[in-house]
Image (tube, rainbow, N blue to C red; front, side):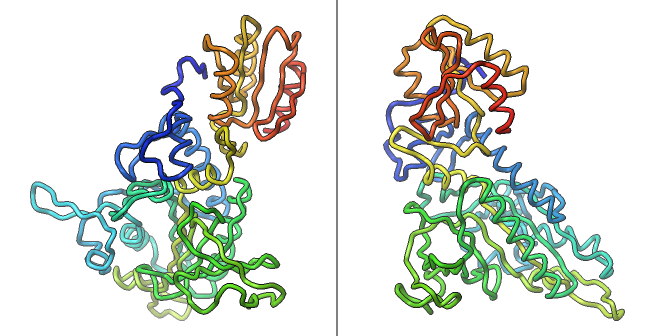
Length: 410
């Protein structure tokens, strides 16, 4: 990609209404533009990040036997009334058509996934089954804030699984939990698995995946010596300084955290609402056990910016950076030739071919946050200057050495 053609350009000024760092940096670096509070346009750079993040999630969901579908955003009110969600979900967007029919904008998809699966579940032999999709969701937030961490429109992966027994569900939940932890590890995030209430979805305990950050809204208590963590907004059993109930070795510490994923044991609430039954191993009619597994993709993108940045801009993890390298040419040189070689080698490259000074090019490069900056100039004497975004160290490498290193990284 030629930076001279990149839409749009970076901005020197921060948006006046930016209340969080992710909002400010994503706008200034040209990743998003705010349409209104809680609603954003994802620009070419931002969409590349969202797509890469989605693909990492997709790969891990496929590994745990999830099958991808695409369910609608617009739902008839009848299915929400059938589950009680129409009157009980306060963040549900409700709209009326010109024919006076009522609809909901999806804030989740239990109401479409359950009747969908009903068509294929007849016997225990048809179970388990798991379907997921990556789709936009809507929440009628009273006050959207924190940039893309808390929006009225957001991109989310939600998976729904159906099982013949609680035991089978528990086994699948363990697989899903490990898949989530693998996803966050690939993104360079440490996510704490916390206990919380099931809210409007379930009366049972749910599990949230929280990333420690001052930009988060959840109040958690966690243990440094083990994986124990609890959301104190829902569960008042513990206090700061209490001994960890799991390992008994350390005391619980408070922190702000941002929820990036969750898991709910839905039991039989939704399958009973839609009369989803199957014939069990004893030849009797039974209701399956259902679970749902959400992961906020656009929210995770915002959390990553909150976690990985410095005073100059964003520092993207390699796995989801919009490009592998940012190639900068200073003066007349071999930049175009090297750029074309990278393209032929399938190296994702943003090439700064603009007629600007070195200072402005470096400022923009740091702001955009691509993991590797490569500089070509007369001073590099036929070589290429390599600098990792997260480091101050520079190296002079041959073109072949650069390509070899980038290939090994990939």
